[in-house]
Length: 337
Image (tube, rainbow, N blue to C red; front, side, top):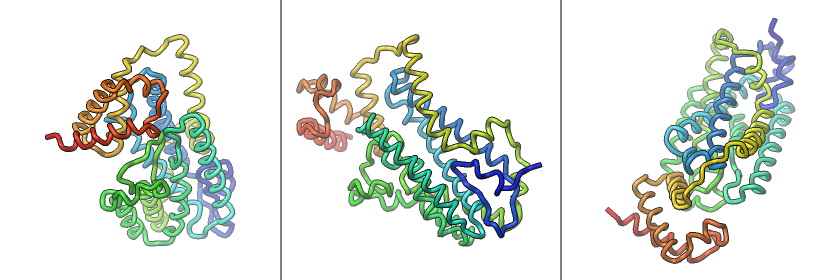
């Protein structure tokens, strides 16, 4: 026999779905736990590709290009969609303020811990607004849509998704605007999930859940495959799994590197790959990125700056020579046919 939400969801550290005391209890949707577990597996496989790149087993830029780039966006969308869906199950028709604040506090604390840890280990690409930050802020905004008509929420989701394409401009390049996702020059980060367009996925989850609840169709989800117990367990403890999986993967690869060392990487190829990946992340075309990186490589080598830059003896954001040649190469690559 399935336990009620009030009994069972106390274990869920990401999507607390505890029902208000005066609401009829809903059975736990085990298929939803399984879906969250699948999203965690997908996330871990993507992060493993990033780790392989970090240790030198994959070429620089591999995890941010092609299929893996699309894969990462699908994973982030699924987490936010499920967060919006769970928000309705937990707090509609009546907001449970205490459970919501408790859940929000846990997520905010976890997001802060990730920001501090990544700033310590990778200050040039630390996570200042990643998936947990996006879930926390989007959930707060999502409360405003819990009782809105599902169609209106779906329209708001669509608007949120297209807003970056319509409103992106240099005005939002200042660091205090980075969380919005409207900057023309995107910041470097190992996990950048800005409010726009990603809140659109959470709002879509709210709209779909409201549609099913209003029409008493949640039983349809209950008929979906529940998956094995370990998968559902991961879905119920998704925050714990999220926080622990990367240290485990990195530790495993570190140990594996002593047995099977990564191949030696040509520093020139490493620079070009990293440069083009960073350029593509800014939304530029591949041909422009190739011209820009070839230009900067040529200038760095001609001015004997390449080796010091690669070794970390000089920092690109603190050396005027690097900034000057980057600006010149930007103009040259933009003006080329």
